[in-house]
Image 1 (tube, one colour):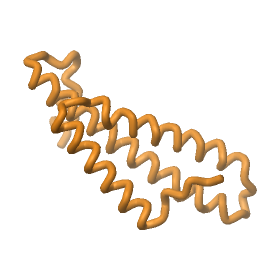
Image 2: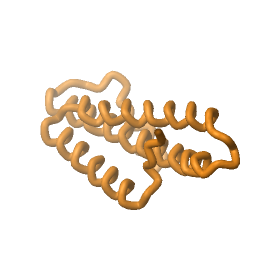
Image 3: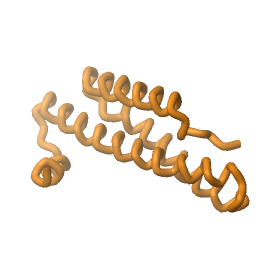
Length: 110
């Protein structure tokens, strides 16, 4: 069974879920909320990679999986940066210093 995340409606729903979870994590100042979805998408990348090796190259499923892997990786990046951002918000709310101040390297490059 292939979990197809390359359909437009699915992508729209996943983006809406990402926005809602990041907003929820920001409001309650809990970086663990986006981390759950980060692990879900890492598991999807792993699952799609294994499925890619198991299907025939000339099949329709092969093309679907090839479309799903980049979308999974995009969501991994989104949730990773959301985690870093909310972790920084939590540290500021608790008057703590981040261990490595993870987002500074990103904002210096932008």
